[in-house]
Length: 319
Image (cartoon, rainbow, N blue to C red; front, top):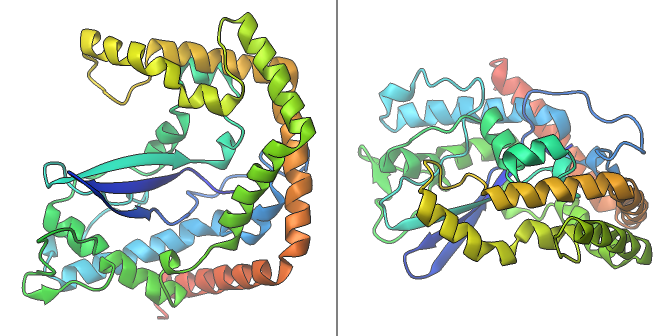
């Protein structure tokens, strides 16, 4: 089961520069779904890092701490990595804007819990991620040393030491995986995306969308699909006016209109059996994709298992 993961898009003041993402490490293991009728169950998850990702994340930050001390950041020798820190964000005011989107398998079909939606709107994946991975403020030199994500005239050295390729976290990944995950195509991610794309074209999925849309109309919301409701392009003007008028302390907090829409969305999913219907289609397509792509999926699973074995060795001092 893939936990909440932030996908970071870094933008300079005038142009897009690069994208990066938190490796998909799961937080402290939780009980996974045991039945194919459970909407959290995804056949492709059997080939993912799954719960053992927390071990890999701990090994990564253990090595990264050692690397940072080697680069002269003695104050990070006792950095607390339990719980695992948030993936480093570039400090504000350094000429680069960071936009963050969150992905979580628990929200693969959108919001489902009306009470959660009433509280968080469509931001529950972000809230869950931030709960599991506390954010930390880094200096620019710390950020560069950790990530190796350079822009413009960023220095490539710190305290007289050359920053490793992809920073200390990248160096740690190479020690665990043998290469950086960002440099590899992840067949699990690709096929999970493909399954959704194919599923949404299925007549039964479209029928579920239509039933959900009809329910939403009775609640005063006009969207063809749950994705349209989540994007909420029709809400943007009203939400902007609300933020300008109310000046909320948290600019990322969902607006009252978003909460109202998300609550209706979740209720209509429950009333129409939406999640049950689309999940069955998703499972069927994923099983087909697994049959068609088994060799590369098995290769990915072996790669993940070797990374977990290496992470255990690092944590037990055998590396």
